[in-house]
Image (cartoon, rainbow, N blue to C red):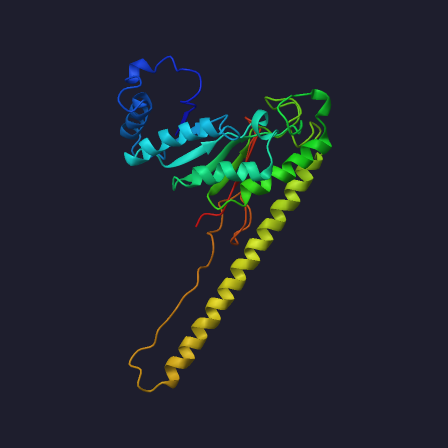
Length: 269
């Protein structure tokens, strides 16, 4: 369950939920209290836009998050990451944003990513939008997101040209052919998955070797009354039908056709 954008334009129902109150954000707290009471088994997230490249807005959001966390009312954070923010950011700036939210100790999800590839300064010029610029911006922003340990998943807010809420933010053409950003993204995800699987396999081998060594040492020592045992993780569970591979580091893909969304999830631990 997602409660969205409490720090942006005033909500018409704010006063009905207690207004600012003593914390300054009583109405947000009340919203989460009601959601927790009505849906006790649901995971509750807060989902905001415009904090990616605005340190003041981000600090305000973190204040709200910590108020909710102190009361056990929040399970994760949604960062929308729309083109009107991320198109004007570098990978380093995105990491700064993610680091700040990660300090709360909650899992992060990029919930509405779209990139046009306009430029680097906040002065939109549609003439600068191009497939090549979109690719360049994906290459700068997406690795900073995906390689951040606290980010557990990414949703692209539309990926088919002509079916996105922002023109030129799709990464697949209407005829099904790939734009450069999609071709790169597939290669990046494949490389990332292979690298993670290789690392997991190496770790398992090392653990097995250590276990074997421990067992050998234990049997050669007659004074030992018991032998120690060790085990290694088998990696992430196999995905449900329609998902990616089952090895650690694989990616779970979910295509939401009705909304034209593309979701990328990291393997469950």
